[in-house]
Length: 220
Image 1 (cartoon, one colour):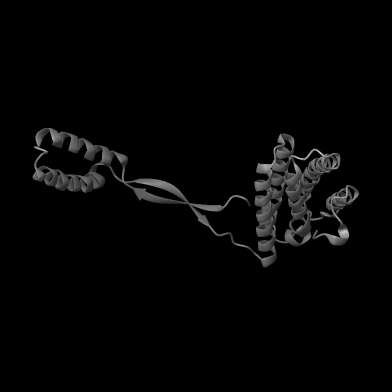
Image 2 (cartoon, one colour):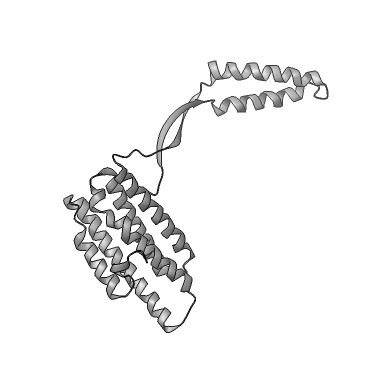
């Protein structure tokens, strides 16, 4: 979902050999015509235009070229659209935050988390009914991870013991979240079920135990 939808089209374009032939024509023309005279340029210009169309029609036919055009995604429901758009927006924000964090191991774990989450969004795009069962992913868990990484970025350079401990909790949480999200993704494709409750319950407990979130005040 992080990649735009693209359609491949074809179009006919002039063969490059036509332009090479025109260039050769001008090179030869400069050898036989007095180029210090204006009429020489007029003569070469007229001949070049005529040669251009003759070469394209009779000698070097146009060739087909493929090109991509970005298109708008089509959705089956507003819920599916909101799920994917909100999830994509949050993942892009997480990617930006991750670029500011100077921790290779955490960076890699975040990249894996984004990749797995993006695949879950792909699944929802192909299975519209999954949006309702997986809505906690984009409404709660990804935004929570975004907030935690934002705070991590803000205090990354601090060395106070309490801050160091908090950063360690975030690092451990990202690793655990990776496992939970991968398991959920595998479950979606292996059994085609939409039950995320078992995995999110694990995350919920970890978030609360580590003091990273308050279930009674999820917006903070």
